[in-house]
Image 1 (tube, rainbow, N blue to C red):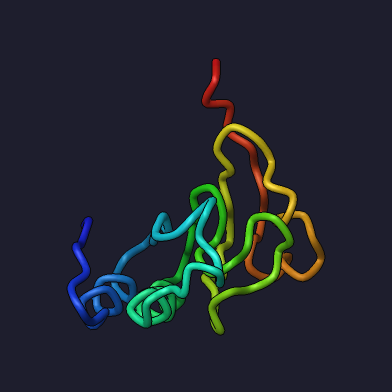
Image 2: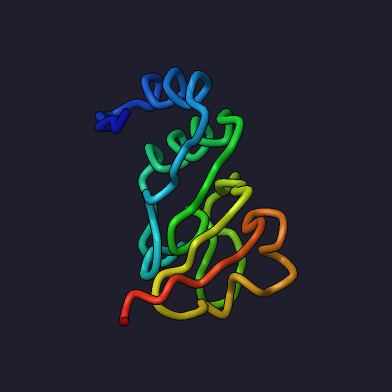
Length: 110
């Protein structure tokens, strides 16, 4: 199921808990602490983290792509991360390792 998120994440947690696979594509390149993420983003990341298998697209939501530091208190913890186009430096930093999981780059330019 693809769900839309309103002002709370209660539906997201319900779906994440009963889904085989949860795909995190909430926040990516360009998101970060400097943009003061709304509280709903933390709530959705918490809901995503209740899933049994989590895959992130381009990077786990809550992790800075430049330096690998977290900008949300509890970022998404992905089992696998599929980076689009080119490796983002922050995803290979040791501080991001527990959130990134297995890392693969997808060629979107071919």
